[in-house]
Length: 475
Image (cartoon, rainbow, N blue to C red; front, side, top):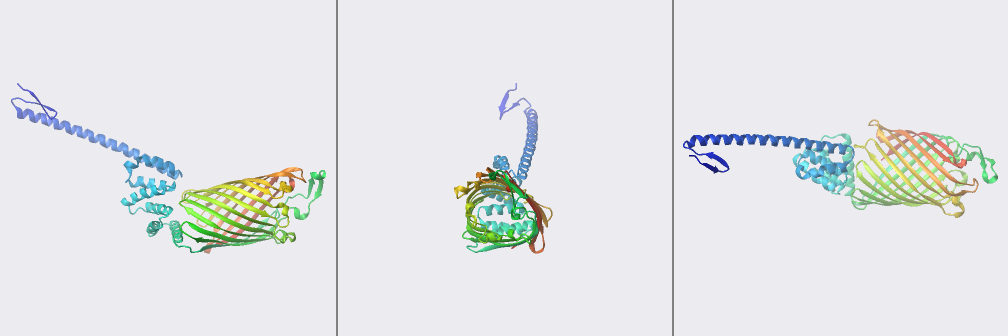
C-alpha cells in the first residue's frame, strides 16, 4: 500500500519502487515551474512594453505642451511620474526646461542637474541650467555653466545670447560701475499734414448761429518735406546685484523747409531707481520734458511736462513678459495757461515671441484722465482709453519687417462753448516698415505711417500720413 506524503506543498506518491516514481514526479514539477517562469517572464515583458509605450506617450504629450508655450501644463503632466522616472535624462530634461519656462527655477535646477549627472555632454541641459542659476542670482554657477557651453561648437546666435548673459553677470558683480548706451538717428521724408489740422477752409460755429468763418492758412492742413535729428543716452549705475540708478537724456529736432513755423523740438530727461528680484523688476523714475514749436508766438516753448512713472515688469519666460505702469504728468502751456492739465494714466502690456524670439509681438491697453486745472475750461479735460499692438518678423539675418496699430478714444468732460456740444474723438494710427542692418551696426528703416482723427467737432477732424526713412546707430 502506498500512502500520500505532503512535502513542501508537493504531493508525492511513495511505493515499492520509490526511486522511479519520485524522479518522474520531480521532473513534472520542474517542467511546471519552468512553464510558470516562462509565462511570468512573458507577462513581465508585456507589462514593460505597455509601460514603455505609455511613458513615450507621456513625453510626447509633454513635449507638445512645451512647444505650444504651455510649460505649466507640461509640468502638471510630468510631476506625478517624478518618483518613478527621475533619473531618466529625457524625462528630466523635459521637466527641467518646462519648470524653467514656468518660472520654477529651483525645480529646474534639480531636474537639469540629474540630466548632467548621467550626460555631462548634454549642451541643452547645461545651457538651461545656466539660465536657471542666473534667475536664482547664483551668478558664479551661471557664469561657469555659460562658459562651458560657449567653449563648444555652437551657433553665432547662441554665442551672442550667452555673451549678453555674461555681460549682465559681470555688471551685477561690478559694484557701482557706471555703464552707458548712446544712440544717434537721422531721418528724412514727407508729411501730408505737418500741423495736424483740418483740410476744411470754412467752419460753421453754432455759437454764432451757424455762421461760417474762414480759417487762417495756419489752421488748415499743410504738407511739407521734413528732416530730423536725434541723439540720446541711457545711464545705469548699479548699487548692488539687484538695485541700480538709471537715467537718461534725449534731444530731438525736426525741420520743415517750407512750413518752418511748424518745425518742432523735444528735450527729455529722466532719473530713477530700478530694483530686480527674481523675474520681477520695479522701476520708479522722475521725468522732465519740453516740447518746442518754432512759431514766433511760442518762443517760450509750446508745452512743458513734469511727472513720474512707476512700473512693474514680470519675465514669465525668456519669450513672454507682462508690464504694468502708473504715470503722472503735470502739463503746462506757457502761452496758453488755460490749457494746463494733470494727466494720470494706468496701463498694462504683454510682450511675447515664439521660441527663439522670432517673430515677436506686443499688446497694451491703457486708460486714465487728463483733468483741467481751471474749472472754467472743463471742456479741455478728457478721459483717454486706448490699445496698442505691434510686432516684427525677421525676413533674413540682415532685415526684418515691423508694424504697429493703435486706437484711442477721448471723451471730453464739458461742453465746448463755441460748438455747443461735448467733444468726442476717435483716433486710429498705423505704421509699417522694414529695418535693414547695415555695416558697422547702422540700421536703415524706410517706413510709412497714417493717423486718422475722427471727431464730432469738424475743426478737430484730420488725417495725416508720412513716408520717411531713418538711419540709426546704437552703441
